[in-house]
Amino acid sequence: MKSRFNAGDVVASYCPACGHNVRSRFEYRTVRFARTRLRVPNVLVDVCLDCDAVLAIPSESIPQLREAGMAKA
Image (cartoon, rainbow, N blue to C red; front, side, top):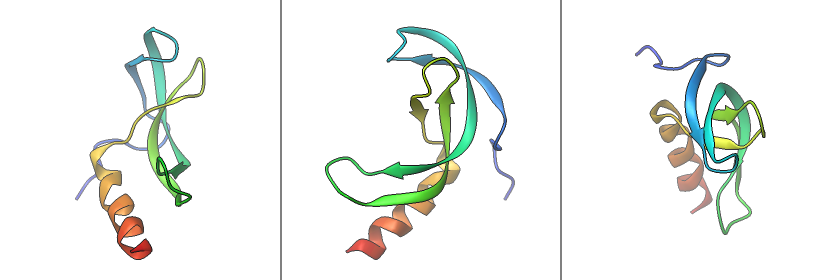
């Protein structure tokens, strides 16, 4: 299955931290689950180029996050 997004792809997104439309880039980052100490390394995410905030997690990264969550249980 071909990924819809690849690291380095640049797209237009809305950044809630900046409050306007921005250019963003897909990058691999370590993602931390809210209200837990679980961290998942090397997850493809959409990052704001202005403030460096994570804007979205594409659907192709969801299985990786599910696998990490199941391993924790």
